[in-house]
Length: 156
Image (cartoon, rainbow, N blue to C red; front, side):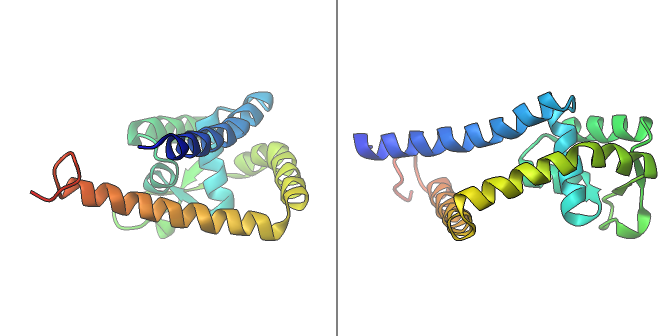
């Protein structure tokens, strides 16, 4: 790989990691476990969550999210919602206690995210999102191509 490509790949990866780090930092400042925040973020997005959704969206181990969901159920924040389940996947929604808990910090996060989008610009964030999705699809395609060939990328 040439130096310029390596530099841009490294810069891109560092930016992605640091962006996730901002959310982790926000979680720490609000005394919420980062993975718990991701469960609640998924519920905010969909109205419910399954373990599979959270794992697939954030590339986290199933056992990790199972433990987070179990702990949140024990704390009275989540309940099982059978009607929203997908096949064998159990769906969870917030209890009234869970809604109150989530409200305490999601107002803050929504405000920060909205201010960030306004400062960055709606069109720029939309373009960035589309470009990152396109790059992710190309990268995944290249990984698949390599998986079908030898280590040097040539088909066997």
